[in-house]
Amino acid sequence: AQADSGIDQLQLRQQQLNAAKAGNQAEVDVLNAVVAIQQARARHQAAAQNRALQEKLLDVEERTGCMIDRGVCTNGILIDDEWTKIFNKYDVGVSISIDGPADIHDASRVDFKGKGTHADVIEGLKHLRKAKIEPGDGVAARPALKATKTKSAQMPPAHMAKIMTGWLRTYGK
Image (cartoon, rainbow, N blue to C red; front, side):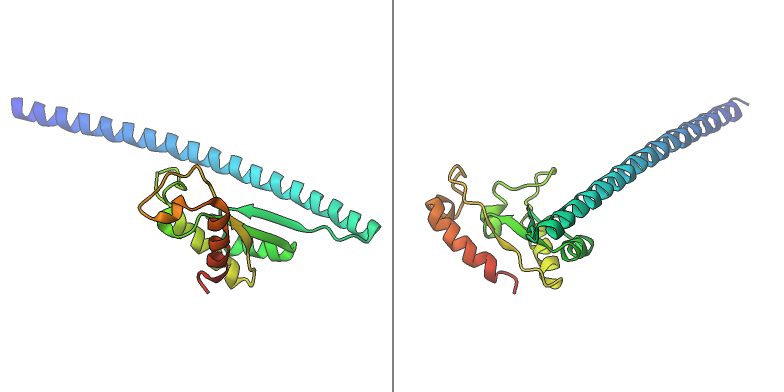
């Protein structure tokens, strides 16, 4: 009888834990849904503001006969096919900020987990080139960058910028 009582108590505790787990999961699911709605609302608002701005720019172009160049400078890590369609649709020029080869770039450009972003930047660059968008030169020559294993980080900024401009033009082609 004592053993049956112990088993019953364990089963009851297991049921209580499963109920608590289900309740916690439901709370997480609701919070995720709320965040998703907030993100969707923010994307919609940004798209509406962007469309309004595009209409204003087109109106200015039509009234004045002047072309307004549109451009963005980005680290490129979020560029995907959807972004390249937007860039092409609105004729937006794109510049990529990159510090050079992975050992130099990743020494100071990391994501929120502390992982270097060079590979992600190159993926964004590949998306641009696949969409026939050749990025402008967005070289970051940062003299405050501490020396890494390579001597490149110790070069004068102007010299580093010259090297990086050529590197960016040819990398990945």
